[in-house]
Amino acid sequence: MQEEKGIIQSNEKIAKDTYRMKIAAGMAKDMKPGQFVNIKIDGYMLRRPISISSIEADGFVIVYKVVGDGTLALAKKHAHHTIDVFGPLGSSYPIHENRNEVLLIGGGVGVPPLYELAKQYRVLRKEVHVVLGFNDKDSIFYEQEFKALGCHVVVATMDGSYGVKGTVMDAIQAHAITCDFTYSCGPRPMLKAIEAAYQKGYMSFESRMACGIGACMACVAKDKKEADLYHRICKEGPVFPIGKVEF
Ligand code: FES
Image: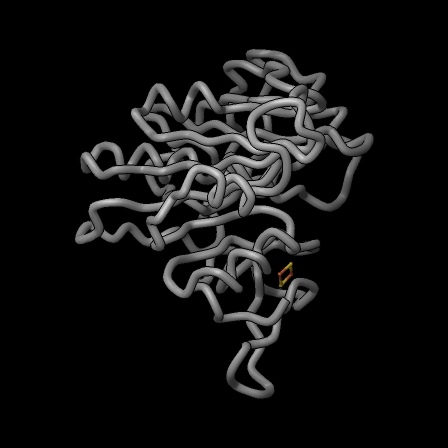
């Protein structure tokens, strides 16, 4: 990991309160799907952890939601501005080359890290099923981008304004998707439902972070089997095998 001044190449709104930023940075060559970067926002002491959505030859892409003044400041950045990034950080989604098909399940801001994973599985010519969950039609993003990779994409919205009405689990059932090797990222209730239904695969956890580099223990999660064993979401995670941590 390293600190670097990246150059913003683009920063655009892609859905309700949701922005995509492309950053030119040399650290991209060390990145793996599922990892994140810590971004410094002017005027704020704590860096923001944001997952890596796409790894490119000359940089990387992040997708972030505007949830407060810090991310609003990020949304106001323009192309050619510099941005202080630290990374890549955390664990990554392992690629299983022996699998012929995988199921990627993302909810809201949990969708972005699955995009790079889908890219890498499609390079290997594997079947990739993608189930995306959002609150409503205006919040949907990346449906077309996953389709352009050749993935089978299903969308669910909680209010039923687009796709299957309900959760990602409702969408999996409605479309009778039988693939049982899953990669997921999203809100905890969604991850709990996935953990109850699947035994194989990996989950990425969102957590409140402070240092983001394993030093402060602000992000620990308890091991599911071993008493007194804790994992730092920012260091040993954010990606864990299904059933590894208590949440
Ligand atoms: Fe400090 Fe994870 S945020 S240890």
